[in-house]
Image (cartoon, rainbow, N blue to C red; front, side, top):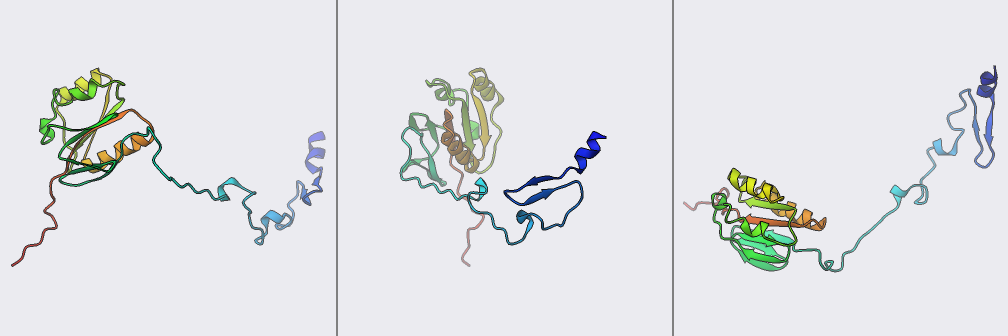
Length: 186
């Protein structure tokens, strides 16, 4: 019997003029249900505007790949011709021509680094290519995760990892010149 009495009990909040009851009331009894009510920035955080301006690169944030072409890469404003190895402290020429040249010897510079890298991103040209399983096994034994992608995605992945302050390195092979859109004069 006490629950029935509680269910019929009317609760009133005088500050907002709300009237709550167990019976259905008119639909526009609350000012928040009317169409004329607009949210102000103080009503909810998601309506507050935020802007960020980056004036200069944060020191110690690592190297970033700005662009790439069939000739090479633009890394922090430095033009690197041909394949390159991006290591936490350096940008090096990498002596590989194609994905078939990625061997245990060619990746040895990545597992000799201090501090140890967490992840190695390999860009294999215009498309993702299969890397020799013995190379992947060697890096796994050394505790290095490997991500093999086409060069465009490898550049984006490397930039993302560096922006997240991960200890990452990249071995990148520039994609070949595309002839898909070349025009022939007749």
